[in-house]
Length: 252
Length: 252
Image (cartoon, rainbow over all chains, first blue to last red; front, top):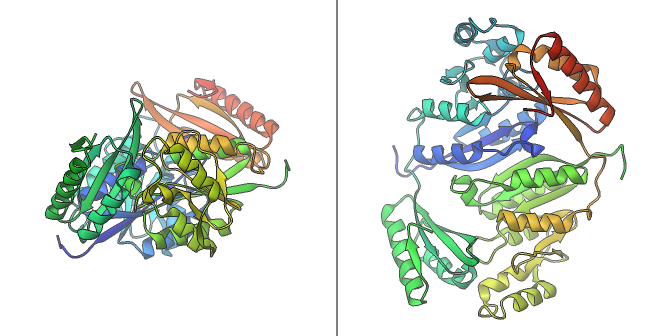
């Protein structure tokens, strides 16, 4: 782990079902949280339809400017599962059957009617790929250098992230601390800005909420330095107290 | 309404809280569904941090190739709310105080301590903008031509979408029909592909699930023609019946 270098990642969510509103995406939040623990910052997410050109364009734009690119969706057995083809095209490599993936699928489907043409699609990878274990169903995820192709079904994605835990180099994780207060954020906008400016390397986010007919906000401080986070939190609590607001370290 | 022209939109979600995983995005699904009803297809979503350059780049890329661009997030009163500045920069216009927005805020905050510097930020708009009514809290959304800036808090976003209903030109809405079956999608990948190819203008998506220890999938047919949707559904049900699978029109 290196302290000075910031590692970044992008996520590409592939699937008409997200863009039609049929399916509520759950992968952005889980990939984001997992990356945070690895010391990698999620810098950008794109959601694109099941269209080769759209995927290719996004893959190339995102991998060029991030250390890692993750994709979710489109690695199943049906005709709308075209992620492997699109990523291979973006990387400029052929698509090939991965022998280990084929063996995994043959074993998994042995008592389920065997491997047919659709199922064999799930053994196809961009040439030169490694596999990401899938503990929930047969088809593995795929790793090609710094590009990671994962399933779209959230619990399968989660299993693949688990399998990748500790396998990828990250930097100092971004630490965070939260203070919640029953205050309209617009009352203390000036205070937040002052504190952020006074603490180099800090970011302070303000997240308003409406509960029980009252207005409040959680203020989230982020920094790679625990000392900076603590100092921001202390200054903020002091300021809120002086202004007469109830606040809760840890957030409301 | 025109039948032949397809209207497209992009959505830009702005906010560190989504990229950190702290907040589960809910706006993609609700904006997508709303757009579908307006006869507008959501073609691409990007999520970017609270960073001017990232927002400017995304705004310009997305508005250039879609009929409409919607943004959520970053129009509040605090220092991390920079959407207005970034969009103005992308559009090449100045930022100005909108007199009607100022009047709305003065009224809204009259018995809440009045308008301070932070709150006045919410009256700032890219020059030449109109307002989008906000029925839940003071600060309005902003419309500049085909660019729509909305709040990030989902129920406020929903109110702004309501206010825009019927205000934006769309084409023929994309219709859909669903068939659910207790079948591994990999068993009928070939059938799905055949049906889609035999029906011009149709798209068939396959969405597997795991419930009660069994594998199933919902198959969603989309087309602007009701006849095409029905014919795909009929052919699919016939095929599933012939293969001996239980299926449920309308989805499981």
